[in-house]
Image (tube, rainbow, N blue to C red; front, top):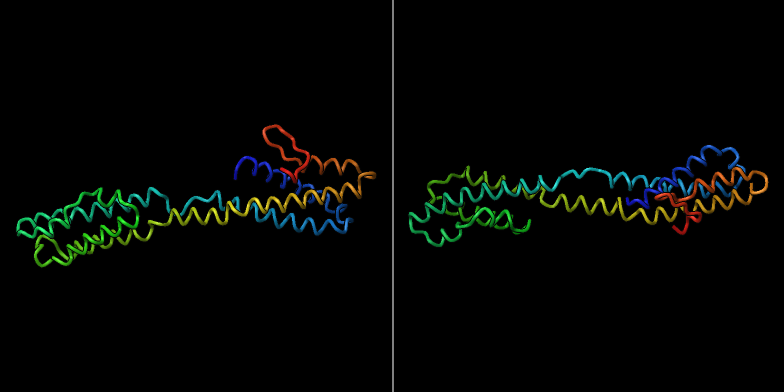
Length: 223
């Protein structure tokens, strides 16, 4: 929520307080209840969206990066061990498959890093019979590291998309609905109480202003 939206939310909260404070007298206006219902529904959506925007991501990017680096470190640790044995026994093709740095995995894109770690793991696993300095437990360790990273690698992006869908996109339409209702409520109050209760009209006129950096805007629906 940007500064202008926060200012609009402040306006909505003032109008809500006005409606609560003067509920008795406002109930005499038959059409007012319809506008109040529309306004309250829109304000509820605004508050829900604002809450979504303020939530801390369930999976932080640094946690994902740590899991990626862990996957890279474990995979290459055993790849190097296997590569030495492959050199000793003359398995030069296998050496080529295992001859990679940690950055080969850690600096690759998310999906590619998983593919690279998985390919190295598979070459190690397929050659355990000749790579006698490795064990099935080593392969399992690599598999667990890959699985741990794979489970969370897309979570920050998904969280961001969900926040945009439920926290950012609904705001413009909800504010438009809320301020249409506010303007209709003001017109009704002006119509019914402009002569008999100008103080009430002025109170709502002040409440519905959008106040941002000291500037008062009188026509709320066009902000």
